[in-house]
Image (cartoon, rainbow, N blue to C red; front, side, top):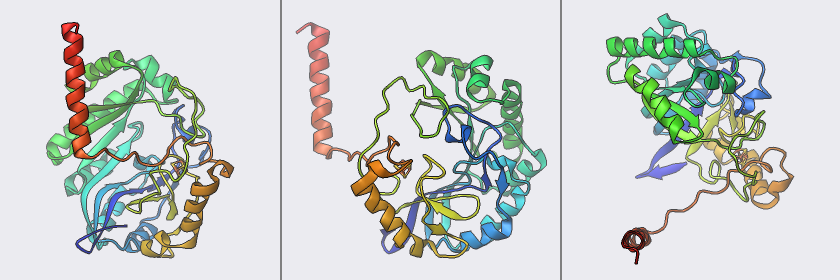
Length: 314
Ligand code: SF4
């Protein structure tokens, strides 16, 4: 894990408090696997949290591949977070499909003031037909009801809580359509384009599938931790079953991150990735290093100069 002035820091921690999801969004591996919904017991969650031996987590997400609002005791999960961790948390987020809610529990969670972001995922072109086509069996009406109710609750109980949406779109027209729906409801829309994910029932990226090479960005550094709903540490959030590194009910994170299963997995990615059932097909590759600052400035300058040439017809 990353260290800064001898502090052990996780950049990202995804922890599935629920395994599985009630939706079969066509671009998600959950569309072909994980039919069963499981919920982590708060006592098991507490054991796992105690074994995450770091000082600070920059971004803690209470989900990885499951739908967190299907948990039947969210307040107990937040009791654990309020009392158990040895580490501090800068941002704590829940991401939901907004199709199921126990409002009494959500209100309880909002009132605690621990949650810093609530994120709703909603794909398609911004129309009800498209939304329901890409996220079966989700209903547009339920989405809108959730957005309205969550905003009211946020305003009343937790005014600093950020309300954001993440939406997979095809083009700029989709973006404009979504903005016209979401912004009047008080939500901050974020967008991304389609990604080819192993196991998804449909791919809509519009480009050829190109498997990545070498060690992917999710495991090439040790500042990212992904955990499923029984405490198993998994490699990433791109596929729920890409591998297993150990279980946080039984071991500290510091032992798992240096352990043999993870080391073996990284070696396979580096040397024989094409033989791995899931990773061999996955498109994620190594992190692309940022060019040095001087190169960025040079490229901006040459971009401006060539733009100038075009505009003057030179
Ligand atoms: S190669 Fe893909 S599936 Fe495998 S660990 Fe990396 S992101 Fe996950």
